[in-house]
Amino acid sequence: MDSGRRAGRPGDRDEQRAWSWYDWANSAYVTTTGTVLFAPYLTSIAERAACGEVADCGRDLSVLGLPVSPGSLAFYVITITTVLSALVLPVVGAAADRSPSRRRLLARYAWTGAAAATAMVLVAGTNWQLGAGLLLVANVSLACSLVVNDALLCDVAGPDERDRVSSRAWAFGYLGGGLLLAAELALVVYAEQPGGLATGWAVRICLAGAGLWWAGFTVIPYRRLHDRPPRALPAEDEMPSDSLVRASFHQLATTLRDLRHYPIALTFLAAYLFYNDGIQTVIVAAAVYGQEELGFSRSVLLALTLVVQFVAFAGALVFGRVAARLGSKRTILAGLLGWVAIVGLAFVLPAGMLAPFLALGVAIGVVLGGTQALSRSFFSQLVPHGREAEYFSLYQACERGTSWLGTLVFGLIYQLTGSYRPAILALVLFFVVGLVLLARVDARLGIAQAGNEQPRVV
Image 1: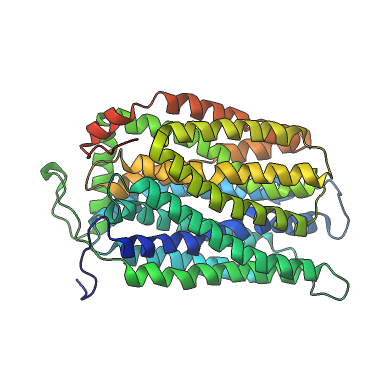
Image 2 (image 1 turned 135 degrees about the vertical axis):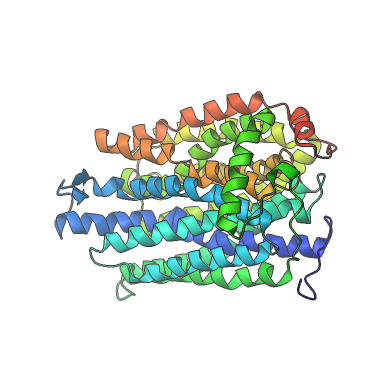
């Protein structure tokens, strides 16, 4: 183990702050590229490839011989990306549990994704294929890095600290993403003025900037987090092997067999799969919905996302404080009721009316950061000791690996109806199913099943 990298203990505030920097680092990509710019930009590239300079020609792309609406392309690419992630993430988690340096794994995945994100500056003209490929690499790499980062929460924070540490880190991430987005909003607004930089170039510069931000700030957790030796696995899980990949698949198979011994954790994962699928689809679809259905410009969408970022910063902190009193499960349930109301309001929102659109963005910001941050800390209480990364790989598989149904449904309904309104309304079902399943989770029993220390409130 490197000198200066000796294992710290949960409760080390310096290490907790170092860990929180990765939320700051990757939020720039999630916010600028994943939420605001890339789906509408890829849609415009695909429309140009299908129609040339003719607007709304009604022609489809031909993708492997199949007709694909340019307006649905980004959602299909995200669907393929998330299904691929579902196959990769459990192996990543198994390898991370066996690795002597999780911080190195975190950095490698992060820098691979950041390189793909930065290369999006090259996507131009009609080259939607390059954009789709880079989106796939960046999103899969991000998901792999988050598996490792989420597992590190169990190393840096004790049971009674995790809601606070996770909420503050999530809030810190929204603050970082918001600050970069503010600078990029100024660039896009300037580009839309007469004599300004071409809008396409402005978007591409913003995409590259998000990738560089992600890469640069990942250096902080890489340098400041401590290495910890992998915890001893149960005797039946040990196998002599000269192949980390082979050993990882063996551990994965064992974990999937043993998952039946943790039915509460399994129920939570099912709930999270549904409600997070709804959240992720709203995040991805918001910019396209605002631009194509409600008629707002790219600069307005950037401004709204900026509002959401800073409101979510406060929302995550408030949710963390509420969870300290009421417990994370009750607080998440309240957040899901908020999501149901938000999606219903989005369906009836009039086109072109800015004030209601901004009010809806504020409501999203209030519930967005809190539900995600507390879901991470709540699940950390349910995972068995020594297998944090592998179980968080299942968690990330629900977040980014198997959360493909929402984007698929959204894209299909748009292709069938030609309207994004029924597509957005369909997402209510995901929140309702997730809420019902989460209500069935017995948190105390789940923590006991995992053999973990009981926190004061949960």
